Image 1 (cartoon, rainbow, N blue to C red):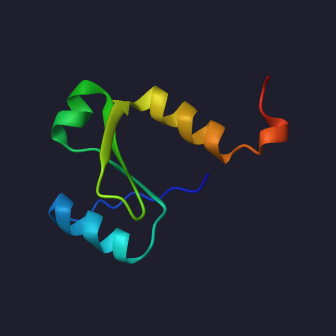
Image 2: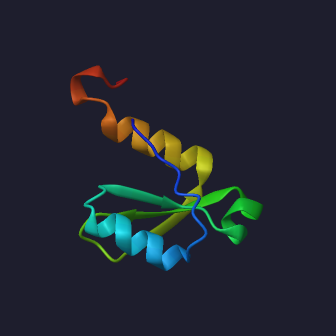
Length: 74
Protein backbone atom coordinates (compact mmCIF):
# COMPACT_ATOMS: atom_id res chain seq x y z
CA UNK A 1 0.00 0.00 0.00
CA UNK A 2 1.19 3.50 -0.79
CA UNK A 3 0.10 6.43 1.32
CA UNK A 4 0.66 10.16 1.50
CA UNK A 5 -0.32 12.64 4.21
CA UNK A 6 -1.69 16.00 3.11
CA UNK A 7 -0.83 18.23 6.05
CA UNK A 8 -1.35 21.56 4.27
CA UNK A 9 -3.28 24.27 6.06
CA UNK A 10 -6.37 23.91 3.84
CA UNK A 11 -9.94 22.93 4.61
CA UNK A 12 -10.59 19.18 4.57
CA UNK A 13 -13.29 19.45 1.87
CA UNK A 14 -10.86 21.33 -0.38
CA UNK A 15 -8.22 18.65 0.03
CA UNK A 16 -10.72 15.81 -0.54
CA UNK A 17 -11.94 17.45 -3.74
CA UNK A 18 -8.39 18.06 -4.95
CA UNK A 19 -7.38 14.44 -4.39
CA UNK A 20 -10.62 13.19 -5.96
CA UNK A 21 -9.84 15.20 -9.11
CA UNK A 22 -6.36 13.64 -9.06
CA UNK A 23 -8.13 10.24 -9.12
CA UNK A 24 -6.75 8.97 -5.82
CA UNK A 25 -8.55 5.59 -5.42
CA UNK A 26 -9.09 5.70 -1.65
CA UNK A 27 -8.98 8.75 0.61
CA UNK A 28 -8.74 8.33 4.37
CA UNK A 29 -9.79 11.48 6.22
CA UNK A 30 -8.71 12.09 9.80
CA UNK A 31 -10.05 15.29 11.29
CA UNK A 32 -10.02 16.42 14.89
CA UNK A 33 -13.04 14.30 15.87
CA UNK A 34 -11.71 11.19 14.14
CA UNK A 35 -8.31 11.62 15.78
CA UNK A 36 -9.94 11.78 19.22
CA UNK A 37 -11.98 8.64 18.48
CA UNK A 38 -9.17 6.68 16.79
CA UNK A 39 -11.25 6.47 13.62
CA UNK A 40 -11.02 7.39 9.92
CA UNK A 41 -13.52 8.31 7.23
CA UNK A 42 -13.03 6.39 4.00
CA UNK A 43 -14.05 7.78 0.62
CA UNK A 44 -13.58 5.82 -2.60
CA UNK A 45 -13.03 7.25 -6.07
CA UNK A 46 -16.31 7.76 -7.93
CA UNK A 47 -18.47 7.64 -4.80
CA UNK A 48 -19.77 10.39 -2.56
CA UNK A 49 -20.39 7.87 0.22
CA UNK A 50 -18.21 8.04 3.30
CA UNK A 51 -17.69 5.17 5.68
CA UNK A 52 -16.39 5.69 9.19
CA UNK A 53 -14.49 2.95 10.99
CA UNK A 54 -11.79 2.42 13.58
CA UNK A 55 -8.26 2.85 12.25
CA UNK A 56 -7.27 -0.78 12.90
CA UNK A 57 -10.37 -2.03 11.04
CA UNK A 58 -9.64 0.28 8.10
CA UNK A 59 -6.04 -0.91 7.86
CA UNK A 60 -7.11 -4.56 7.96
CA UNK A 61 -9.81 -4.01 5.31
CA UNK A 62 -7.48 -2.15 2.94
CA UNK A 63 -4.71 -4.71 3.46
CA UNK A 64 -7.13 -7.55 2.68
CA UNK A 65 -8.42 -5.71 -0.38
CA UNK A 66 -4.87 -5.17 -1.68
CA UNK A 67 -3.90 -8.83 -1.23
CA UNK A 68 -4.52 -11.05 -4.27
CA UNK A 69 -7.25 -13.67 -3.62
CA UNK A 70 -4.85 -16.60 -3.98
CA UNK A 71 -2.61 -15.19 -1.21
CA UNK A 72 -5.36 -14.47 1.33
CA UNK A 73 -5.72 -16.65 4.39
CA UNK A 74 -8.56 -19.14 4.02
